[in-house]
Image (cartoon, rainbow, N blue to C red; front, side, top):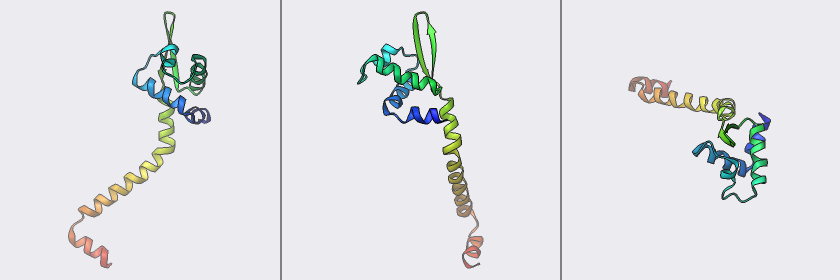
Length: 112
């Protein structure tokens, strides 16, 4: 998971992932179009994303196509975000239960 966090730490790599999310199957040349760096610079960023398993590739003839692999991101969400999300959802469910409780039970809780 360290590789994933390292890969996501750079805004250029996050931008590349955003582009692959919107339009998967881009070649290196297509990814380099409009980038603020050389094609070789983009290639280095893609290599880091591949090492973190955030990008997968597929050869189509002589073209190497790059695709976003969301699996490592899902792992981060479940491990790091999910535990906080569960507490928030539990609090909302408790709040809903208290709001829907009959009025006499609400009075008892306030005075009891």
